[in-house]
Figure 1 (cartoon, rainbow, N blue to C red):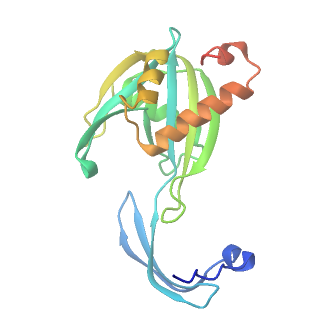
Figure 2 (figure 1 turned 90 degrees about the vertical axis):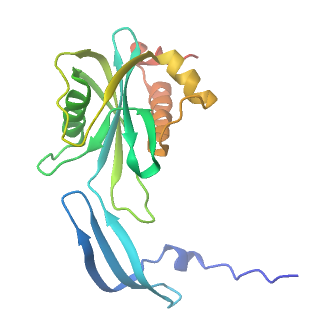
Figure 3 (figure 1 turned 135 degrees about the vertical axis):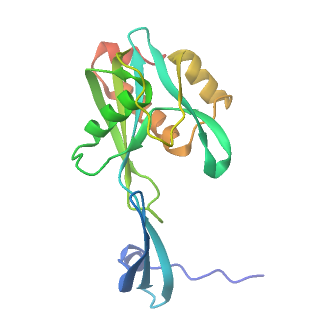
Length: 206
C-alpha cells in the first residue's frame, strides 16, 4: 500500500511562482530561451526553469467559393515528416494585429487572398513552456491572385480539397494534423454553431 501525496491547497495551486533569477541563455530572430530560478509556493526551488519566448502564431481555414479548403504541404524537419496543413505562420515585428499577419502568410504561402475574414478563437500554444498564443481564423471566398512568395527556407506545395472530404479524412485519422491545428478545427465547429450567418451555418453538416 502506498501513501497518497497530500493535496495542494487551492491557494498554493493558484499562486504565482517567485522569480529569484532570470537570464537569456539563447536568442536569435525567431526564439529566445529564458532560464529562470524560481521559488514555488511550497518553497521548493526550480533551477533552471526554461521558457521559450516565441512570437504569437496564426493559422487559417481558408475556403474558396466552391467550399474547397486551401492546404499547404511541407516537410517538418524536427519530426522528419511531411504534413499537409493549414496556412500558418508567426506574427512578425511591426505587425500589430494577428489578422494582418495571417493575410500576409496566406498570400505568401499560397498566392490566395480573401476579403471575408472571421476571427474564430485564440489559445495559448503551450503554457507550460511557451509565452505565445495561437490565433485561428476563417477566410471565405478565397481566390488565387498571385504566385507564391516563399522565404528562403520554405518549399511549399499548395492543395485544394473539398471541405467535406477533408473533414472526413481528418476525423478518420487519414489526414493527421498538428495539435494546434486540431484546435483550429474545434474553433471552426464552435464558430459555426454560434453563427447567425446562413452561409457560415452551412459550412458544416448538421
